[in-house]
Image: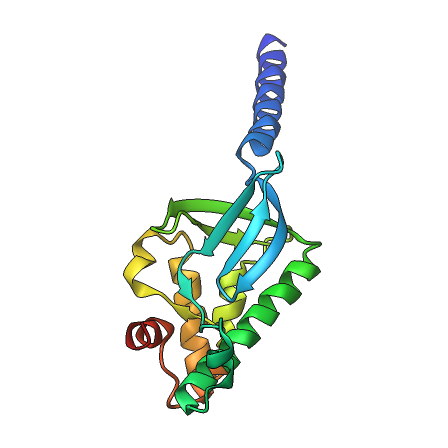
Length: 184
């Protein structure tokens, strides 16, 4: 009888601490204020502080920032911006689908002060995985070692390449980091 009572108490304690632990370690939920492009957004934390977020693991095509860029006739530039705008629109769709709220797992800060983060919808959908699987972002290998979902995004990219989705359907597409390097 004592053993049975002790076992019940122990089980109850483990269950209670487990439930408390779920609340403590749950990623914080943030309200999305702005989608800047296909891999950057601004969120507001529960206290109302704005935080710029750079998606971990991936790099999306660039979006035009100036009238001159928007008017460019160069095919490489037009392709970069076309895919960049599609990536930005897709992030906006996903954010809207998630009720304008995301969960972040912050892994680092970049040189611009942005929080490098895994970005998930409340249903667990990893936005980076969706973008890469659809060919709207590429795995950013120089920082992959700090990426909690490295294997997931690498698998998504392999699938997108094989199926020639998004940027992989355009043979002359210039990787975003190469585009930025050439157009400083």
